Image 1 (cartoon, rainbow, N blue to C red):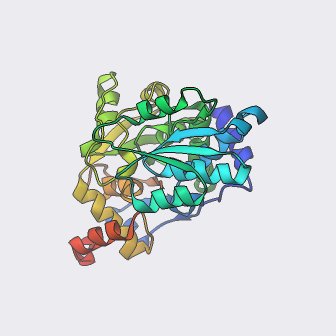
Image 2: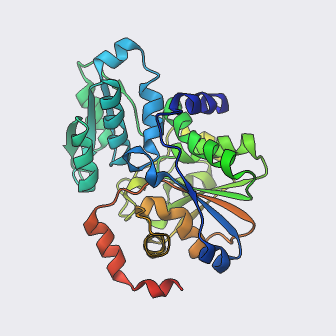
Length: 321
């Protein structure tokens, strides 16, 4: 898989943004560690998902491209598939929940995708997609459980490590595990001694339970503010990869996630969606004891204005001192 990550990096060269790495002096002093943020909120479509989407669609045959692509997603994978489809001239159809953030629904339609909405309380997106596929020749590209998607997501850590060098810890958010799998594979091949931790919301801890028990656990439509992690479970590909390459998992509270979003906004002047703030949340809340040089992947910045306002207005930024 590491070779696939390197191939994906070549494929994405000049297409995906080489996202910046930022740090905060006040945070480093507060935590007595060196913290580096790989900011995929500045990626195309505002999230790392562009990488996996481009790598997978650009790997299709000419015939598959002509027939079109189907995907399902709560938002960021949807936008990424739609964006890449527009770039490469591939028709895209996306199955999205009715409660997906409006900014993600709007952007997906803006890129020209055919959006099929479903009720996450009564329907399962995989079932909706399977029903739509009947009698059609579309290629299904799932949001995480796909070799080319995982390889594309792995280029985040590949770039990060090439720029920053050795790290003691590398933290990545976890929903379905595509980003975490790719991150861990890249890390263990480039800096084997680096500890890779996956971070999840407490309310969506299916991957943590799966990692610790060795059995896939499922939590359909968990009520976390981090909508990018609302996948029901790890996949058949990501589960064994995470078990093999990831060192540990940690969970964080909704309050810790909100605090991290506020820190990014007030202190680092960045808009980061709750899913993208999980790594920082684990550090600020003490779920991970910071030591040495720590890399944190900020997975995305797609959040509605109303959602951001609600988080910012809950507490004054001075509580972060």
